[in-house]
Amino acid sequence: MTPAACFSERALETLGLTSYSSRAYVALARLPQATAPDLADATRVPRQRIYDVLGSLIDQGLVAKTPGKPAAYRAVDPANAAAALMRAHRDSLARLEVVATDLVAELRTDWLTARNGHPPCTRRLERSGVARMDHWREYAQHSVLATARPPFDGLADEGWVHRVQTITRGGGTVRCVYHADLLSNPQLVARAARFAAAGEEARVTAAVETRMILTDRERALLTLPSADPAPGAEPGPVLMVDDAHTVAELEENFDRLWARATPFSSAA
Image 1 (cartoon, rainbow, N blue to C red):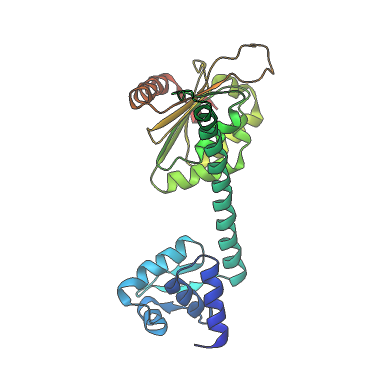
Image 2 (tube, rainbow, N blue to C red):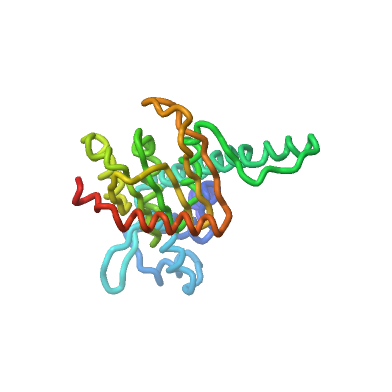
């Protein structure tokens, strides 16, 4: 192994790659392209592992596959590879910050209550919960059911577009029922179309009475009616529900609303 290869492999491992993945990328970066068996021989990565290693590098955007018999593989530009690895770390840090924020919001009230010798609350009500609803969406892994009402804050969330893509490309589903007021604003319609292009299934109806997000059939957050119904008033309290029976009922209610709503593609 050359000193340059040794440094490159250590650098890639620092950026998050495994030893096998680092070896494979460094070797490919010094070749026009290579087949999987040839790469395994060149890097001493076991042949039974090389396809998994290459698949992981492809998923991370570091390696491209060239069709053929046998298929060949080539490394992407190291500048793009390093940027992709750094972007993954930034995304991971952002998710950790969300988790840390919600951990504090979830436990600190109970911690303070316990220190004062009082029994814990079984339900949490919070003011101005739109931001926290956005945070809880990040926990979704397999499915999201959502309802949206004016002012449709979530449609401006670029990070959520990416999250929708991640969930749906992984075989999950994202469904949203928008209040029909959405259709009166071309800008909002265009934003909703971006979510649809990312894989969200959407429908529209005037019967949406509250905002809700239900993730992975385990937890739901919904906005309760505001005490001030005037336009521009703060959203009402947010109720978090993790009781399995109640979550199932909310899911059934969503399905009934979905069945009555008009597909977004037709309505828009």
